[in-house]
Structure formats: C-alpha cells, structure tokens
Length: 240
Ligand SMILES: Nc1nc2c(ncn2[C@@H]2O[C@H](COP(=O)(O)OP(=O)(O)OP(=O)(O)O)[C@@H](O)[C@H]2O)c(=O)[nH]1
Ligand SMILES: [Mg+2]
Image 1 (cartoon, protein in one colour):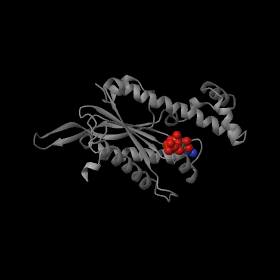
Image 2 (spheres, helix red, strand yellow; image 1 turned 60 degrees about the vertical axis):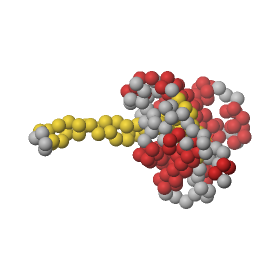
Image 3 (tube, rainbow, N blue to C red; image 1 turned 135 degrees about the vertical axis):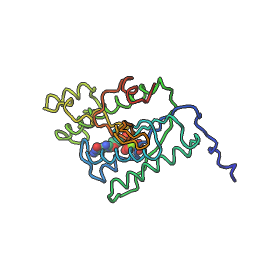
C-alpha cells in the first residue's frame, strides 16, 4: 500500500533556502463571522503576530513577514528533511491551531491556512519580500479606499468604482477627503516582521571571577518595519 503514497517522495533540494507562504482560507468570510474592524482590525493583527511568534519558536525560521491573512517564513535550513508534504501540512496546521488558541474565541468554522514552498537563492530574498511588501501597500490603499467608498455608495457601486481606479487615484481621493495614508500606522502599510535580535547580558563569571558581557538572542516582532532594502536583510543577518 505504501506504493500508493505517490507524492511522499517529493523533496525540497536540501541545500536550498526556502520560503513557506501561508494564506488564510476564506478569511473574507472569517472576517465577517468575527466582525473584524474595517479596514484594519488591530486584534486580528495581534493574533497574526502571535502565530508568527509560535511558528518562530517551534520551527526556527530566520525571518517571518505577515500582512492581511498571509505569513511568509524564510528558512535557511530546510525542515523535515525536505519532505514537501510534511512541511506544507505540519506548518499550515500548526499555524491554524495557533490562530485558534491565540484568538481564544468561538469560530463558526474551523480556520485553515494553505501553504506553498518557494525555493530561493540569497539574491532573490530581498526581491521576494519587496514583492510581498508592495502587495501590503496595495492592500492598504485598496482596503482604505473601499472602506471610504462604501460610506458614500452601495457595496456594488463602491466595488465597481474601486475596480476602475488606479492606486494613485485612490490615494488622491482619500487625501481629498481628509485621509492621509502616509499617516496611518506603519504595520498597516508595511506589514510586520519577526526576526532574532541580540540582548546584552551583564553577568558575573564565577570561574574567571569577573564581570562579563554576553549576548543572547530573542524573537523580536517589528511593528515599525522600514521599506525593505537589501541593507535591511543584511542588518538583521538574513543575507550575508
Ligand atoms: N475586516 C478585516 N478583514 C481583513 C483584515 N485582514 C484581512 N482581512 C480579510 O482577509 C481577506 C484576505 O484576502 P484573500 O486571502 O485574498 O481572501 P480569502 O477570503 O482568504 O480567500 P482565499 O485565500 O482564496 O481562500 C481580505 O479580503 C479581508 O476580507 C482586517 O484587518 N480587517
Ligand atoms: Mg486568504
């Protein structure tokens, strides 16, 4: 019967770095069920950051990036011996369980995430995260835009209007009506990043009978991300 498990031999190349991207399944409906605030729900983002932290502590990626209902995890070592089905299923189900635990509320339906694997080279890492961060900014413009238009028009009219508008036109419309997107919280524009930072620890070394400085790393959640650059990824030691 083992022969029927035709996909079990699929493996990610061992010496590759990989990004795993999770995306909430039907979170549009979930947002309705949970009556999430529009355009951005702070509590939802807090839960999303807790899910990233749980994933970080359990699977040790080197960087996580999240916005809306998606999470990208960068691994410099491939987990689960590269077994593709194992990676996708375990990471996605762990994320969904963490989401439920951290929300701590009743759900109408069990939440789920889909998961995909993207092999990357060092030179593509910045490019990938810039692509997702640009999407976060587009999402910020669109969700504020549709939220504003729905205060003026019916849902159908608002959707039709926004579909016919370019990003700079939505930005301008909001600005003319007293909403300056440059002033909204950074995480809404640029998403959240999770990575390790070093903490300085002063301690007494009994053996050597002297005070010493050492460093311990801890998981840091960055709500004030800069616009991504190559330098940012060098600074947080994700690329050399
Ligand atoms: N109200 C509200 N909704 C949010 C927030 N963040 C994410 N969402 C919802 O999550 C959805 C994510 O978009 P998609 O992933 O494209 O849509 P989906 O319904 O999850 O569909 P699939 O991913 O294809 O299963 C958005 O359309 C929003 O409805 C938030 O802060 N507030
Ligand atoms: Mg989704």
